Length: 396
Image 1 (cartoon, rainbow, N blue to C red):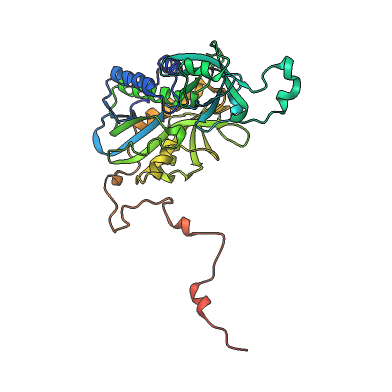
Image 2 (image 1 turned 90 degrees about the vertical axis):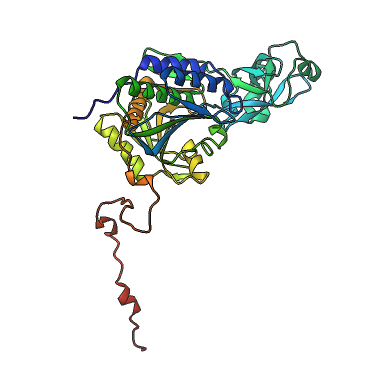
């Protein structure tokens, strides 16, 4: 009789999520969030190592050391960086990560200079309604048409520079988290701090249950996913299965739901591994975990970056459904619980193919099949026999 699936501690999940949201971490400014997650792993008793820049590579030991599997979340978020200081002392910004300036307007932010932290607001260039009336509605939506107004005594370039502000300073946007009685969780930067909280909760549930994973698992916490590199250089082990954990857009044309986990079938880098995605879907069905299948059109993940870097691994992507991604995001505790349960089920499941521990030989005997019989060769579209094509009709 198989052991019951361990249930995640949702109080723990929400606590670490709220604590991570309080830590600014735009890509390139992630040391503090790395320290926080490393401390959480230490409390759980999970050993880890750090790369030079701060990617966390942890190890949850299993009964076998090979083939390994890895699960990755990213700790970096979208944000901004100082591009220039205007003559009026206000600041022009460039985005960190790919997101629209529409979501930046009206935000409260922190600017991190070499001297300390300055607070301010991001505003359209024509910000006074009593002065510009409807002209603000005619302004283009772009990072060239917004500016940062610091809460400081400055009215020109020299005074802003005297505050210690310089090109290249990081700007973090306030998360404004709210956890409602309906179970909804709204905040900036749920991407991917909610995914990180779900992974930590899944690790805790497996450890608390006393169950031992069948193979070694390596939780990865990356720091450059929003700018594309992510897990590209984070796999020193013989990893055969790699599951990214990230955000799933809830929007027209998408299948994801805030109250369910999502198994992504394809993103902008192409389809995910046939066998690994279906392994995750079977686990969800077996454990009655609400799950959706979806495709993501304008999206890349840590899993994609690992394949692009040349790793010969099977990849899949698990996600939590979220409305208004890369804006003021909203998910639901039920969706995070479903994601955490599915991660736990995957950690305790056998490898998709034990034979992946060794390179395939010249024989097809151990190679996988996407269909178990000749059905894949059957088709409603019939083709003529090759011999019939080679018969030449006599000249007329």
